[in-house]
Length: 135
Image 1: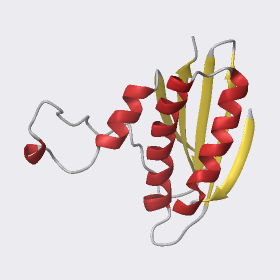
Image 2: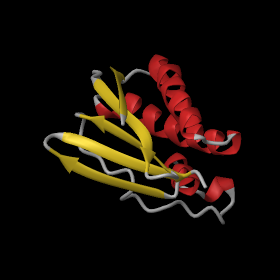
Image 3: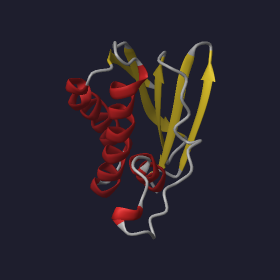
Image 4: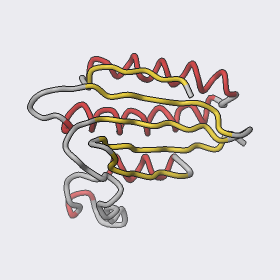
């Protein structure tokens, strides 16, 4: 897998998206898949940049690449506050907007766009893995 490490700052989002786009294109991802991956990546990166090291900042490493012939894997690694975004209950999207709880919709959408997502905390690092099937 290829790897990029940047400071967890919102201004580095475009660099991360560009890195993943280049690798996704090389792996044969379609434009429709690229849009879904971008939305999921944006949600995860913005959360890391906004909350992982608050009020300071720190590094986030993004790894990505093809696993097998049709699984594009993206891994986010940071040493911020331990946080499992997948542990939060999904929002009830059947409720009217004004009745919904604030927060959680971005992670919910990321889970909808990716075929698999998993989280673990290991050796002082948050590790979030996302997998998108290309076929």
